[in-house]
Amino acid sequence: MTDNKNAATETVAENATLLKILGRLLSALDASISGKDRSILVTELSNLNLDGVSEAERKLAAELIKRALQSLDH
Image 1: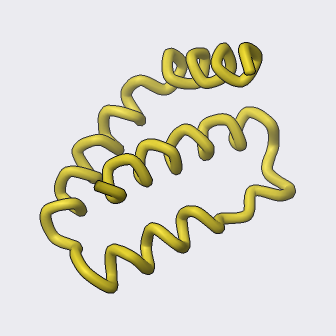
Image 2: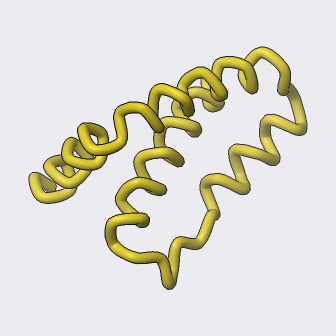
């Protein structure tokens, strides 16, 4: 568990600008999507397959997906 938390922390630090942009995009998306469309997007993000993606990209993608799901799933 600690290794995953450290990896996520490193990913956040290395990609702060990208994560800030994602936050703004998620705010706009949150305001414009609802109902069935929102549910479909949450399902698609939850089931996104990261097989074949490099470890560094997988860490970043996992963090981006986690943040997107937190934003959309309220």
